[in-house]
Length: 551
Image 1 (cartoon, one colour):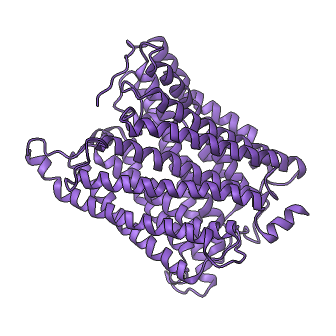
Image 2 (cartoon, one colour; image 1 turned 90 degrees about the vertical axis):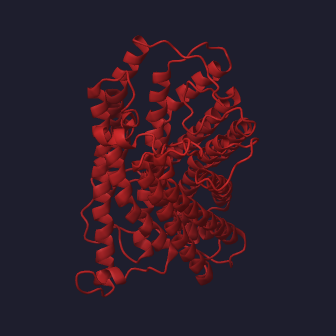
Image 3 (cartoon, rainbow, N blue to C red; image 1 turned 45 degrees about the vertical axis):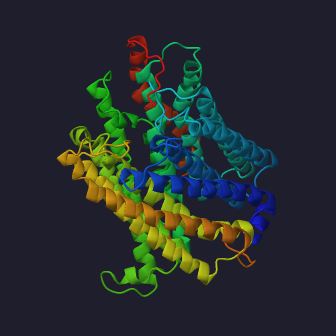
């Protein structure tokens, strides 16, 4: 009864406060990280010289931490905790407490990590693996952030397990099913990087003389690769569950949806070697295994593409769309809650194709450590994921705040989406192309002694700067929209839009909910991908590296 009451009347106030706190931190991180990104783009284009007390590489490190770790982690947890509260009849008191403990652990960890960056004691970029060594406080801060995420993950597991115990024979609600998949990946995918970071603490503090660089890189990318797909799975949850409801349709096949989540969880973690194709010390066979695992993620992605466009066409035709593409015109293009995630989905087509290029041995040799990789990252995360997150805010923030999305704010959202799309088109497009011309990743502006090849990059860097400028305008509009909807929009009730499956759909088999089995299969696949190379790298270890400071 309590569960039904919350689903009809809206969010539990204590749960709303928790999720809104996560959202507020996420968008403050977006604001600061966005300006840091603008400074990077302007310096990289030769239009700005950052001061000696806050260098390009410090900015690059802080930008990565704020947007890659803070924004995404806080948004993902705030979003899923709000959905778990709604679909499971409220968070359990101990789970809500765990959410707050995780919140403050991540906040303290972020402060502890960012202070050394500001002091130029941790200018090691987002990919913080050795032999470059940061201050041990930077590593301690990162460890606290990961442990805070673990606390939130176990809170979600406890809430879902309690619901299952109280509802025997029922399927886990689809939103909670997605949350389970994301938190499983967040926990198991981050075990490797946690081991690495704890080792780095002792190494950077001088308690360990040397460190195994190859083991550290491998542990980092076991997480770095998985993290991208955790954000992707979060975005996919909105595509499957939320978007069909917003356009007035039903979601495609509950069984297929659950299988997509399971496939992404099982195949995800072993794929990190495609970031290490040029690394020595690993056999070609193992690299090919990881390349295969990376490419296998394309299968659930293609299933998703089919499912979503089936929903769009069926809904458009139900609304009177005629002919081959008449359904397309019937979709609600003026609704930011649909427009933003739709553009995000469309962007994932070239983004996914670029990812396939990077997992291919020969093609990877061309683009590895060039600006292409940065362009790919901004297309996948900066467009497919973040635009979906933006679209979510236009219903989630009013839902949590017991306010409504006004037509005026919807229009602001549409304008913001267009500005963001155009800005990312300029910036990511320029990054991709100039990367193919050989412009390196991670470096500040230089003409390499006025070398003719380097001078040929300049026009594309100018386009990059134009895109970055448009994006900061988009950031300012989005942050304004979030806090306006949180505190100043008109009071009212907003729905948490969860689409129902098709009416004539066959019953979903219960085996889809056997998470114990899926986790065992995932760990088996992880063992195939990582046990042999890690044992080999430890037993036949090359000479360890002392810490280096290169800045």
